[in-house]
Length: 89
Image (cartoon, rainbow, N blue to C red):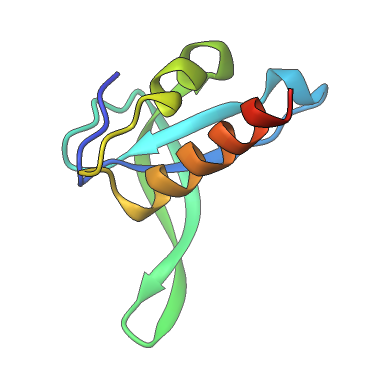
């Protein structure tokens, strides 16, 4: 799992919460699962199906802690959240 400037990310919650995953998608992501997202389309938003790689949090967290400057805004935001959370512990 590598993050590039084209890699997008969102958290998919689950019950129990520890079963949630990070969904990665983009031109450089080998997706294995189709997910539906609401994404910008011009001046509006539309439901869009994308192929995504679902990554368990235990695999995603170490990579999010080491994200570089070339990350997309979505990945950079998740990286900042993970780093802030680790600093609280």
